[in-house]
Amino acid sequence: MYAQMVRSDAASVRSIEEMEPRERAFQQRIDEGQKIEPKDWMPEGYRRTLIRQISQHAHSEIVGQLPEGNWITRAPTLERKAILLAKVQDEAGHGLYLYCAAETLGISRDEMYDQLHSGRAKYSSIFNYPTLSWADIGCIGWLVDGAAIMNQVPLQRCSYGPYARAMVRICKEESFHQRQGYDILVTMCRKGSDQQRAMVQNALDRWWWPSLMMFGPPDTDSVHSAQSMAWKIKQNSNDELRQKFVDETVPQAKYLGLVIPDPELAWNEERGAHDFGEPDWNEFLAVLNGNGPCNRERLGARRAAWADGAWYREGLMAHAHKRVAGVAAE
Ligand code: FAQ
Image (cartoon, rainbow, N blue to C red):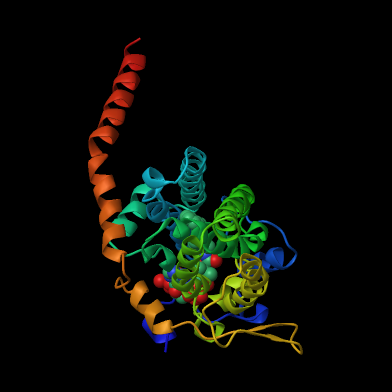
């Protein structure tokens, strides 16, 4: 059902025999584990796939500042406020490294912003959910950054050099983010009141399923996975990473004394992994189509920030032109 509703850039994966010589040589470099760099020849589909994924990833980091930014003024202590500020600033930095990586593929930053502001580009579904309590900030660090790391660690080995290198630094910072979120929850669950524990359980109930959706549609409906894996842009399928995330997160929830809101969750001795229920893919589709709880608010905030910053960008440009004119006149 899903594949019929999304536009796919990727043609079906071609065998090495079906490729023209240039493409075959390119695929062989990938198979040998060599990195592809911006000036190397690359198939148009490889370039398009990377621009799509990296720009969507960059937009996610930028839009991803909004749900947590909502709590900076309401953090419970000065220390928590300083930590949250630093985390949200890190996300801005991640967005900027990623926009730079995408620019090396021949797309301009203005084009990428335009795609975001016009609603043509996607960003992660997770950032279309509201942050209702301080426990949500803990859950974002624990689950959302936790899922982001699970997905991004393999991206450090991505075949495209600039993306892989950006991911090394991003992953280091994401691990700090994950720990700060878990630390909030350890404090609330193990040292807090019954009311605080209930607040955390409520946040987990709301963030669990959207976190599983971050990994993308099931493999059977993932239109890009096969080609992206052949190009070693992706190293693992969506379902593989989702499974790994569940297996790592279940014991962490137990330590906090929380119940994961999935009646089908059970350890499967034979598989050596957890069985778990199916996320509501209709909800996922609704969010992707702009109808999640906060889609309009998030996009509205980004558009407003862009419009409000126009005078500043114009000022910077005027200053730069003056300096160039001054140098030319000397
Ligand atoms: N949300 O064929 P697939 C973060 C789209 S960063 C929205 O499986 P693919 C840090 C997909 O784009 C989080 N759209 O696609 C942080 C495609 O649409 P298109 C972001 C989704 O690319 C933490 C279509 O569905 N991370 O959290 C989603 O092979 C805390 C078909 O799907 C990245 O972007 C979704 N969840 O696999 C910041 C990592 N899932 O383009 C602040 C890099 C799928 O055809 C606070 N990206 N779609 O129109 C990836 O690894 C991949 O792109 C996937 C999707 C795994 C997300």
